[in-house]
Amino acid sequence: MAKAGGHSPRLWRLVAKEAWRRLRRRLRTGPAYRWRYAGRTPDRVLIAPPDLRLADAYLASEMYHGRFPLAGRMVETGGESPFGVEGAGEAWLKSLHGFRWLRHMREAGTDLASANARALITDWIDTDGSRLRGIAWEPDVTSKRIIAWLQHSTIVLQGAEFQFYRAFLRSLSLQIRYLRAMVREMPDGEERLRARIALAFAALSLPTASTTLRNATRNLARELDRQILADGGHISRNPLAILELLADLLPLRQTYANQAEAPPPALMGAIDRMLPALRFFRHHDGNLARFNGMGATIPDRIVAILRHDDAIGQPLLHAPHSGFERLTMGATTVIADTGAPIRPEVSTQAHAGCLSFEFSSKRRVLVVNSGVDTYGPKDFLALARATAAHSTAVLNDTSSSRILSSPRLRAFLGPLLVGGPNRVRSRRTDAGGTQGFVASHDGYVPLFGIVHERELSLGAEGAVLDGVDRFHRPDGSAPRDRDDAVAIRFHVHPDVNLLRDKAQRLVLSAGEDNHWRFECEAVKPSVEESIFFAGLTGPRRNLQIVLHFRASQRQEVRWRFARLRG
Image 1 (cartoon, rainbow, N blue to C red):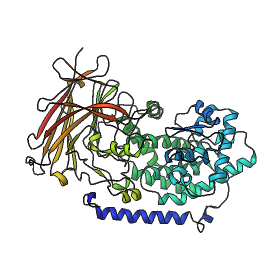
Image 2 (cartoon, rainbow, N blue to C red):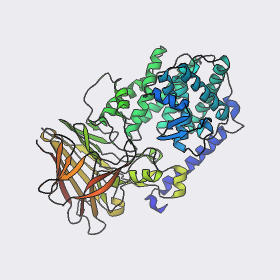
Image 3 (cartoon, helix red, strand yellow):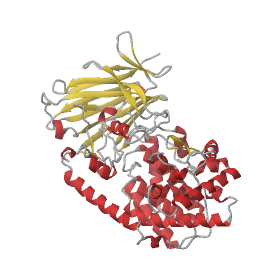
Image 4 (cartoon, rainbow, N blue to C red):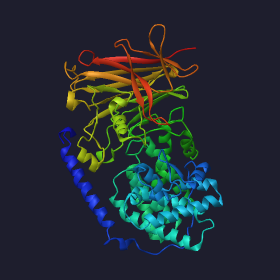
């Protein structure tokens, strides 16, 4: 606990809170409580909400033949039920039990796909439908399954016999009552909000009492107001959370309209804020910036969501509540993290990337953060969260925020981010012909007594990005000559060539008429190997430009990326 950086009392409070939450959940799944999940079975599904997630009929055929490509892994069942597969990995099992893959069968639209969907749901009901334990009944998995069963009830019930129809509705209503009891015991964050979304879907899609719909709507509104920030970001500060939640909230808005029910103002307001926020994090190549758990992007997914943005316009430049800045001029975009770390309770995917940035020109990202390999080894996730995996300054090879060090506490609470900056300041410096900001953080003050300040300025119609990194003590004086080794890192996207010109200056080459020279007179840049974790096919090798120096000898370093003409 000593490595938790003075947060021990707060961590112990989190331990007590988590222990109490787990106890309440265990009681709610025990024999003495299960009678509360019994109840009337609805006689029909009133409406099947739409699904905006991309679907592929080919994958429906693969599943029919016993091949399940889920969570980045292909598992062949050999003709057996996939719900009896062992050793497939937690991510694969969560995806399997979440049933979002039903959309591929809807896309196929054949009687065979419909029959296969029913067979798989019957398998699940027989093997896991009444256990109320294990991965299948994790509340976050249950939320996804409820939404998926409702969204694809048309293809599932097409041509179904009465016996299956009743079994389907009976299981669905059991899951809904279970989730209604469990949602209060869920950890804070995206999945708790999705559970409220699932319960609102259920209240709209099935015959229920008007009070049930009112309660579901009220609880959803409260969670939206709490989790969706004023600038449209999510409390996790993860761009992926915006994309994933919009994929559920947009169909929910349409379902309210289709049922002639008034959606809560909180839902309409959240969507109106989140769509511009999604544009805020989007580079010219269609990918989302890699911050706080963002991995590989499938641009078509973003396009499918943004089609619902009626007020299409330029993205915002300032997201003060989420803690990000955007500089956009011509065909050049810079997105930077200028926010304080989030509460430990929702930090299991957060990164120690304060003052890091990504930089794109035209349809190519040049400077990146390493991102995450979503379904890769957990060791990779820990490496990807470190400050050294981001395009920012690192002191003494130490992250500005640290992952909970105690293995026992980490196993119990999750890999929380602790001991980071307490104060992060940021202000815009836009002026005629330039966009910019100055930001600083004190994450290194407790360990080394040094404040990091970064200033970025984009000018010359997007042809020049100037940067300044400054290092000083909290009182503004120069750092002492100890514990002051600095490495300013610029991770180059693996699809970009890093070359040297005739004068041995570094040049980033990203295709025809998209070449940028890196300049730094004060410190000679070196080129080192790195890993880009967020590749569509997994981690890839890449290079990084690094400026090594001592803060006591050089308190300010200026650098520049300049577009080459011709």
